[in-house]
Image (cartoon, rainbow, N blue to C red; front, side, top):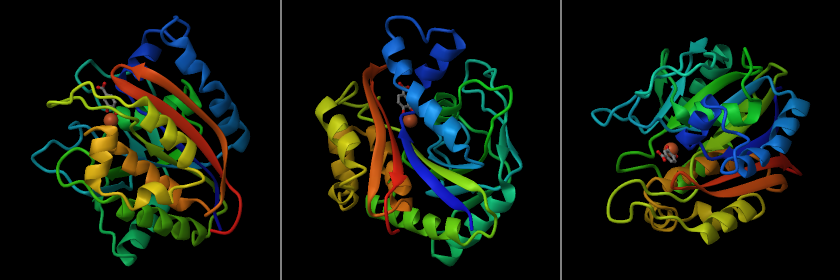
Length: 282
Ligand code: DHB
Ligand code: FE
C-alpha cells in the first residue's frame, strides 16, 4: 500500500510567487518569511515523497463565478500553469499522478463525495505557491500531484466537518492503493485575510497563532465549527483554512508538529505553515 508520510499546511498568497519571480527572497521585507520555509524544504527533500495530494482553491481563474463546483479532482497527466493576468510565470507544468487520481475519484464517489472530474485544469497560485515554497524552483517538479479543488470562493462553501470527513476518506483511499508510493498531503490557503467588503484588510494574529498551534494536537476545536465561525474568525477568504482540515483529517489521531512558521502580514494576509507527522493509529 501507499504510505502517507506527512501532512503540510501552508498559505498560498500570490505575492509570494511574485517575490520569487523578482528575486526578492533576501530583501528585508521577505527574508524572515522565506527563511521560515528552509526547514520545510529540507524536511520534504529528506522525505522524498512521490506524490503530493494538494487540497486547494482556484480564485476565479480556472472556474469563474458562473460555474463553481463544490469539489473537483484533477485526473490529468500534466497541468499547465494558469496566467492570472500578469503573464505566464516561468515555472514548469505540474506532472499528474493520473492513475492514483482515478483511484481517488473512485474512492470519493464510492464514499458519497462526488467531485467534478477534470481531465484538464490549469492551476493558479493556490497550488503554484505551496509547491514553490516546499520544492523551490526546480527545472522539473520532483513529485507528481493530485489537485483536489474545494470551493472556498462562492457561497455556500462546504462545512468544516465535511472537509474532515473527506480527509478521513482520502486516508483510507491512500492505504487501499496497491502502489508503494510515498504520499504527502497539502492543505493550502489562509491564514486570516479578507480582501473585500466592509472588513477588507481584516487580520487576526492571535487566531492565526492558535490555529498553527492547535491544528496538530487539537483539530476537534475547529472541525465542529460552522462556516460562519470560520468567516468571522479568519475572514471571508481566510475561511480557505477549511482545506487544512482535509489534510488534518488524513492524518492519525495523534500527530507530531514537526515545525510551524508564522509571518504577518504578507500582502494583507497572515501567512502560516505547519508540517505534521503521524504518531499513532489512524
Ligand atoms: C491574496 C490572495 C489569496 O488567494 C490568498 O489566499 C491570500 C491573499 C491576495 O491577493 O493578497
Ligand atoms: Fe487564496
